[in-house]
Amino acid sequence: MKNSKKQEKSRGILAIARDTDQIQYSKIAEKTLPIASKTLDLPYTVLQINSDSGSIRYDTNLEEFVEWKNTGRYSVYELTPYHETLVIDVDYLIYADEFSDRMNLPDWDYLLSEHAVGVDNEVASLMGQHQFPTIWATVFAFKKTNKAKQFFELVEKIQKNWDYYRHLYMIEQSNFRNDHAFRIADSILSGYVTACSSTFNNSVFHVTGEINKFTVDPTGISIVTDVALRLPLTNLHIFDKQFLMSEFRGLDAN
Amino acid sequence: MDVKKLVEQVETRIDFNKSRAILREKIQADLHFGFNGGMFKATPELLAFANYGLTFPDHKFVVEDTNGNPILVEDVNAFITVITERLSSVMNRWYVEYEKLKKTRKI
Image (tube, rainbow over all chains, first blue to last red; front, side):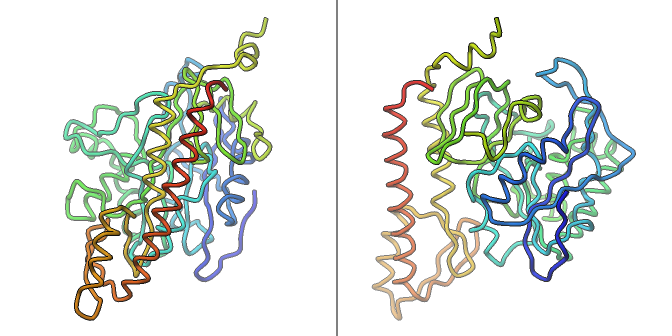
């Protein structure tokens, strides 16, 4: 995986790929990170973080429970080689630059994604019985600043004490989710407010269903799951990992 | 028979309303721009207010940005230019993409 030298005031893309028995995230990253790098004209780095803990989740494509190695994300602050880092899930396809305008402003230490749209199916947008608006850890950004460091240290604390925070925020699912940890950490750092303190302007588009067709051309994206959609060039979070591992052709997907 | 391949080959009718909604959602994000340390959304209302700002003493005013911060606009003409360019280019692009979507019935 490509690694860039540490540079002062550099900007780059970071992704974490931790393979499980069922899903080869590293293989997905080989296809998706070059797309992001080309679209945003930024270098990228893929990390494999060793973490003892993990959980399981139900994969709707495989129709079985699978390993879910989603812990340790807070480590990105220490491990990034860049001064400004855009962190993306390996299953997040970037075909449009929806980040530079926001990241070019001086007023942020970290930027989170608060708005999400389910492209083919609805996605849950509220967290726990207190109904906090969800943060999506699919894509976020941070600078090497003290406040960003505090944020990730808090995420680490929340992860390591998940049972406590889960009950405090009345979250029913026992699985740890970075989305929830980010929301809780931001809320605490901002003085327990419900609105996210620092966000991107764009929505995260989630494609939740099994993909039957996916093509990209200079004018847009055609995608068929349960529904057939014609979209402008935008960024998509693909839930169908099997598609990304096997049929998706990366930069040649047109 | 590989049903999956068959599905891929058969033309599928586009869900127009969903595609239209996602196009609109994307456009809303594209209307945002940065100016003088603030983030703004280019709207007809902001453009009208900025033009009105030309009547203010010294052509300066403070306006709230989308992050809830007060931003001093000292170069009103530059502000108007940025809003106009962003609004017209994004709205034109929206129109073109919407018209293409209306004509594209199947994938």
